[in-house]
Length: 417
Image (cartoon, rainbow, N blue to C red; front, side, top):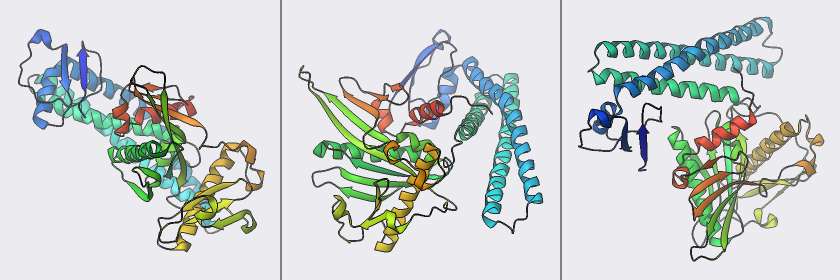
């Protein structure tokens, strides 16, 4: 997507690759120019020269300083955690409690991965610093600065991921995510809006290097979708996307000078998708109602294998239609229901299903979470965090990281390493 970034003075700005330009900039123009986004390698090389050595060096030094401050402390902390977990394994009889043993081993494996990642980060920071020092000796060699800058981007990404992983500390944050999208009342426009949101989440996952798998998609006869379910099978997907729960409103104001405002709404729910061992949650058969969607207001699928599962005490309902058999869909719908109940129990601070207060459950299909203004101004306003983004098209293109980050920060405002 084309965009523009105007650089004024040596102030630090996000790096974006430039588009082709054949104009040579004079020295006096180096501190004020426009770089147009593109992915051309040749244009990227010209940008290093355009940006100026001072500004480029400042960006690299800032990242290296951040790494030198954070990495040693984080590494010491994670090493201590790893040693503690190894001691637990030595002192614990793994055969007495297989479930507990598996939990300890998983945590140890995670700690080892984090320690190795931090060691790698520390090494990359030292490497980038050395390359920068070599570049200062040979100041006309832009390739060395380019190499150092590329290394600093990798370091910055590793630091961001580590910090976010420390913020995502809720019980199910490390799990995958099942995102359920349903068009609200509003006819065809809500259904088209639902399809746009589906595309937004798939594009977001792709930008992270992952894939969102659409397991269910119910098309509308007049265009768009009535509902869809996406599964994201990678770590921390639930932690990233849990803030997306709620009603997403598309708002258009009349262009003819009248005060008419058109609102299309889509509901989004997010439940954990367990990547490893699924928590053992027992639900009494007397508390469950299994029925085809026709009995619960949904249209039956062509295969007839769609299953709806309702938890009678809470009135929560989940369905599945993406599997090949009735039984497989029943299992999947039940797993989604269990995941939702576990989240609610954690939010209410209770340890058993019987302690869940049904009247205290937040109805995600009724609670507004975000507004997308299409006219007169194109901006996105997050209701939960108050964050506003001026580029609606960028957000719909999958660039929702600022919205995700804002929610995570409001949830864990007192972050400490």
